[in-house]
Amino acid sequence: MTAATPIVLLHAFPLDHRMWDDVAAGLARTHEVLAPDLPVAPGEPLPEPALEHAADAVAAAIRAAGPGPAVVAGLSMGGYVALALLERHPELVAALALVDTKSTADTPEAAAKRREVADAVQEAGSVDPVRGMPDVLLGETTRSARPDVVERVTAWIGEQDPARVAWGQRAMAARPDRTDVLRAFDGPITVVVGDEDAVTGTDAAQHMVAAVEQALLVVVPRVGHLSAVEDADAVRSALADLAQRVHDPVA
Ligand code: MLT
Image 1 (cartoon, rainbow, N blue to C red):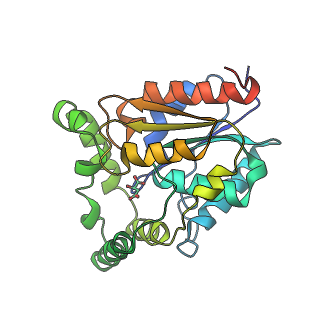
Image 2 (cartoon, protein in one colour):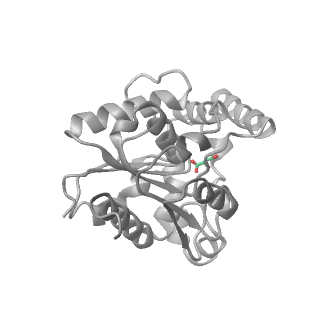
Image 3 (spheres, rainbow, N blue to C red):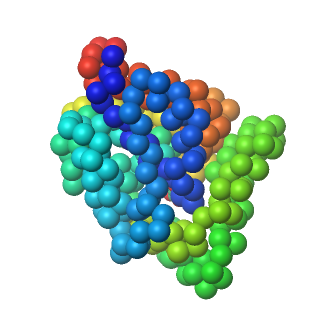
């Protein structure tokens, strides 16, 4: 029984904690689950656009939940925050799941593009510039066969606060390469990637797996970048197995 190890679920951009609902429901039977909104709870003032601030807020939430470190799972932007947390508060991370994410920084072109999107969102005062993102976030199979999932993700994006969306783009643009942080971690790691992920993809997943000897790779078939939404059971099961490895390294 691993009930003493909380599981922290860090969401992707431009979404909120609800993207983890289906995964969290399964894990909550055996674990305390924390799924904070990034970078801070709604209504709290936004910090400067840097993922380190989000990581510090997550650290405070883990500490408030009780003694001992947590299993930390981050999807895409959530993964970037997980690596910032590992760098700044390594004592709080018992195990790490990096889901549809990468450990490297943006290219200068990608960072510039993000800042353009942030400016556009701020000027428009709406999420219109990112409203079409389900087309890239969701896999081809989901987009063609599961209109309910497309609708759900589209609705979530439409409900985001433009100021938080702009924050996310600026903060992600500023993040450094944290492959060395990952390499230095000696706890259990699982890397999860949808085989139709067109945003971070299997090459980024392989790069992280190659950095750490103890990493397990889970490739989820027929899902895109939002694997935790598109196939919650597969991701829940990967996270439950990871939590098990905290107590039983050979599990
Ligand atoms: C996300 O899913 O969090 C974003 O697509 C990440 C990114 O743009 O790198």
